[in-house]
Amino acid sequence: MKLKQNSIVVISFFVFSGYYALLALLIALGLTDSTRLVTIPLRMITTILMLYVLIFEFKSIQNNKKNPIYLLFILFWSLYFIKVLINESNLYVLNRRWYEYLFYAVNFCILPFLMFSKISFNQYKRKILSSLIFSGFLMGLTSLYLYKAIILAGVGRISMARYSGIEDETLSPIALSYAGALTLTLCFYELVFNKNKKITYSIYLYITIILSLLMFFLGSSRGSIVAIVMSLPLFIIYGGAKNKLKFIVSFILSIPIIIYGANKTGTSVFERTSNTLESGDFGRGNLWVDAWNEFLNNPILGGRIEIGFYPHNFILETLMATGIIGVVLLFFLLFKGFKNVYLKSFKDPNYIWVFIILIQGFVQHTFSGALYFSVVLFFSLGLSFSQLKQNE
Image (tube, rainbow, N blue to C red; front, side):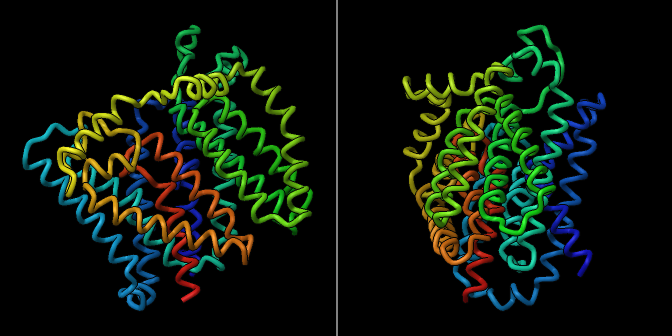
């Protein structure tokens, strides 16, 4: 049982921010060229750990084998796998080897969904949340160490560092920004809804918030602003009068820090967002149009899984790859997951943080990344169905 608990902690840590914290550490140690020698075994280890936890939950799986949610989930990914094989057999140009799509889908989407939907949420909720926040804390620390020159130079976005004469290797700006947004809102959740926190824990949360803002500024992703904005109403919807006041006070106190940090780092996130709102251009226009046209050419079961590259929108990618059938299956899963966590959060605020992650995962993978990399979305979706299982 102890090994199972530790496995869940490790998996939760590396589900998103912890993975990039490790990458940042490798870069800081000058091991940039060796990252795949670490990250690939790490993915193999997390895959084994998730399978190990699922074996523990075998009885639960047997009891819920008639649950239509799991049938629809299996049908969706079976359709996607078939389309990958068809694309390979038809010699379509793919950005990766065909088996990489299958492995990434299993590791980032399928196993996280199944494992987190089967574990006891009540038993592991604090372990999971603590691991997520701690992974963001460590990612913030490693980013601070790795990019101190960029921060002091006021470059604004790490991808622009090379144009300022700074040749340091950098993480993905998108990963930095979304990790900052997610950790920031989870810390706010703890400050507002956790009634049993100690002073030392509150200090830890405030330090993590500062580090999260740093990552958010360095990444300067427009989508991460949307993710935060979409998450904030939950604090009003589910908070009582006292919690609403705590949230408002915390938010107001954060404004000077945000302004100071934005000026100090020279972040372009607000300028980029403003320009996007004025122009309506999210920078993915051509990719989205190509994906939409591919869907229109093959509306029922979809056509190619990629057109040179994925469209950075999991909905359009699902449409182009699996057609109407695939998107209906996926949307039903998403609808049930959102509905469940929305209703459950009214009864117990412990579930609000799952809702936060689900919203941010949805937003993140609507603006960036590939369907088979949508770990934040499917991990939180699995947690929402874990709650559903407890109600049945």
